[in-house]
Length: 498
Image (cartoon, rainbow, N blue to C red; front, side, top):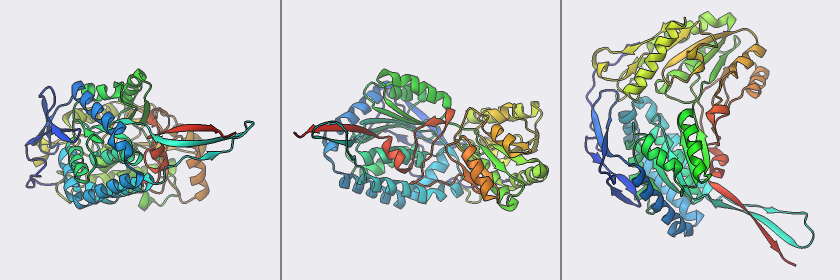
């Protein structure tokens, strides 16, 4: 493992230690309570900003503003106009992308080498939703009732959307929530993660610059237990779109019962990534490694259960471990860094706790296995890329989501046994497999109980392709036409003409 040296810290104008307000009804305002919280660089501990801390009263104000906009001027805005607003926002995101990617790096630690690579995805999502804006339509349905009765359907915006996002990709997560809301004519109250709120607030500024009317997009930073809970249970919110842990997702489902609001959930995972002996190992080694090590393992669909065919197990897992040892760990502002810090001290404690658990359970750490405290990294929340060998299915590191750069390598012998073991998890978000055999690829892909299956690649994403989970990984889809449908109601209309 290579460790980057200390580098000068670039003072970003949106993360210069100043105070940031919340956006409600087109105005930047303080929290009703006057409370503030700090957000710090996880690589250095440096204060980036103090942020208005929203709670129930602020959520009430934001939801009321969203309701006024939804039932007022926004309801009169035509699809073509909404499309233009999204295209203007896409242009502004593209123009300011370097700044936005740096904000993500500063606030949650992902290396610039990763956040800069999201230009096409971030801008592409907004332009995709812009295209969908003018493609929303119902259908004429021939019914079988006697007489002359005409029947058709309308697609209508669901209303006020409460959006709650995690900290592991603030830029794209923000767009994933506000994009379809604007496209369909909904309004939105966004609660960004308290660990990384700055990018969402900056996008809110760009939304105002794009001309999106007051009340259509509101951003209320705060803690999950207060602002998030108030948004999930609010009686005037029509839908909650949530990305985060399955435990919080369960709480949101319970809270949604207050008015039976629509809910879509993109939750955690413990995804299998399967390597057959006939795979292109030169491609599979970095592919399987970065299916977990990317973003320091802080990806819900990371391929953390690495199933490797018995005949190549020792060779392949050893190569993955050597790959991990060569990755450069450090401050994400260094463009050469490949692995940044974990987002917070709490996350650091969680991941290092699992490293201890894995070794106590009998797994062998072929690479990593602990916190990185060398030199300039001593003030940050760094964990070295870790590869555990000798992992058994019943070990906690093979069953529970760690959300860190930790691979659990598991051997398998035959395909039938493999599929049962790969599906033996409460989660079902992502999965991968590496093989040169097309028939095998199709058979395994069909058998895996997961929302995405990547073959000879991992984490491929596109705005037109739906993403979501099975089982405890949630329900509903993001991206694709299915994502837009999540923000629409279907109304049946019957007209007796004679």
